[in-house]
Image 1: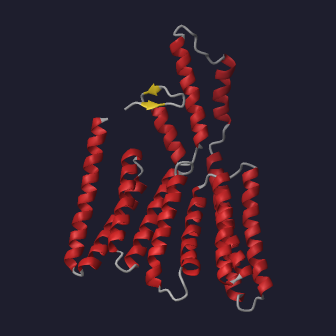
Image 2: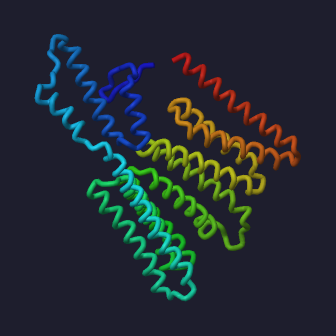
Image 3: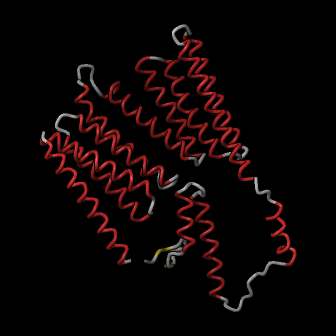
Length: 348
């Protein structure tokens, strides 16, 4: 298989391309960093091909002696120390959030509105402030992302407490989502993607029940609206997977498709739509698994198929034979996908 590099030249895929793709998917590198490394490697290859007799730079004796010294100087416990600091930071954030939650639950009925707003706002400021400081110092990026994700959710809750009612719910989701969007753009941690998924899920339910559903409407009739909303959430995360942690983003897109299928199952006469959504999502994930070889895609895709197909067909047929048919169809789809992917890889 021939691929094109950033300059448009045809090149065979290399181990460097595979490794850079893996690092970008894991969130270790950002896409522009991987592109810079790939361009540098391509430039070196082009220079070598243009001038075969060109002498390659050799490390000087000073450099060669300095490299082992640097390796020997690095303490073997540095990795363990960094991991310990990371864990302590997570524990500190969790203890803070737990303390606020306990105090809030224990005294919520006795607290006035001002005290409730102050409690929520203070917790949000502390969490977001710590995340911003760590990000500015370029320290503990994963911890910064985790604290930011908690801070976004707490800020949304504080907004809801301050405004209250239907307007407060909508405003709380908007504030939390805006902060999460800034965090996803600035930081590269997967925890912010998870927080964004949770906020969008709550937003779908809030908008469905408070904005789009009439006061005289029933919950069953609004389930289709929620199902459509989760399809939009899946699309958003599919796009985020192109610029951020691909494995997490696309797995969450699959989870959104699963949520949409569940909503369509609740919707009156929505079984066909549930089957369509519950097949499209896993199919996309299985194709991604065939190309990227990340087990999360296969796990999420198979889980959706094995839940939605039997359940939807049972509702359509109202007998146990429908469940058996659903399992057979789901297994057939899986086996067909495996066969097609295997044939495609053998032809490449």
